Amino acid sequence: MTTPTDSLHHEPHHQPTPDDGRAPSIEAGHSASDHHVARQRPHADGGAPEGQGPPTGPEKSASAPVPQHPFGDDGRNLLATRMRPTAAGGWRKTIANLTGGRINPGPRAKQQQAAELISRIRATLDDVHKVAFVCAKGGVGKSTMTVAVGNAIARVRGDRVIAVDVDPDLGDLSARFSERGGPDANIEQVASLQNIERYSRVRVHTVLNNDRLELLSAQNNPKASYTLGPEDYSATMKILERHCNVILLDCGTSITDPLFNTIAGDVTGLVVVASQDVRGVEGALATLDWLYAHGFERLLPQTVVALNATRDGRALVDLKVAENELGKFVSSVFRVPYDLHLAQGLAVDFSALKPQTRKAVLALAGGVAQHYSSSHVRPYREDDLGAWIEMIR
Image (cartoon, rainbow, N blue to C red; front, side):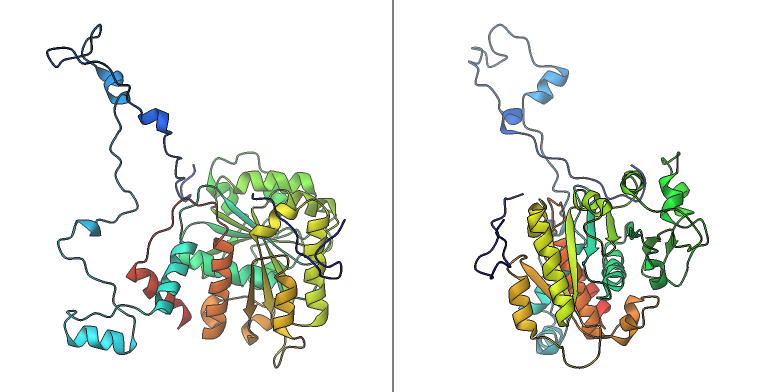
């Protein structure tokens, strides 16, 4: 099989591809035939068509289109005077304030893009979004990126977002949370649950951080004989899908394991994490090449790459060259700068990151959200811009 790394001559051709706390799904619209009203010759007196009595009950409602309320609209379109969004700062906001809003240049293009980023992350989901963080090379910051991105998404969305450690080899995602949860807070316990109707039954086995990101850790007790396999993974996902909107999976490095085959066949998106060094970039390329060669090329259009700086100072690779090589597989590559808070390998707190790191992580979260299964994204709103500014300060 020829792949994009076989002398890098060409790119792969991709084929297009209720419990409380869950965001409501958006139902598909009626087909044109549902709204079609048959043309019938009216009665001479203007009443019902010949041979029929007047329409009653369900027949009447089914014969004409039902007016739909624009649920995505907050009512601002009804205002007699519609205010243009105000800039967040700088000379644009100064002019708007000095003139009492009579002269309002509006926000800059970058500010609008920031607001659209928040709107994209907040988008209503048609289905659970399940994204796996993966790389065939260890030590690239995969677990750290899982929690950092999860924190950003959880802060913006406000509904149930959970990070799950699916590394069968003593995964340590729990080290990125200040609370560990005890011996029963792990995937082995959740996979064995029988009563899954109530979220409270799941919550006793998880922990929650200050950013509202939930964690289900691996069974990482060295004395335990348990090993996560495809069956327990599937049982756990069946439970979590009933209660969570976004599920982030921190995978192990063994992408040839049957467990990863199950995960890759189940998720709706991937984040391939690469450190900014030769081994890290080559590990990411090998991961993408393996996906392409083993029947998972459908995931590549829903995959983004995080180029994560795991050491301070200048990157050990030419980042533009690395982005070009990775870009032969995926559409988006995001750089995450070095941040001591992330490099420590301890609990990750979004507010403890440097402003430029928060901005980069938010952009990466937006890249993940770009592949949501969503039929509705809110248009620009000033409060979205305010949320973005508050998060990167």
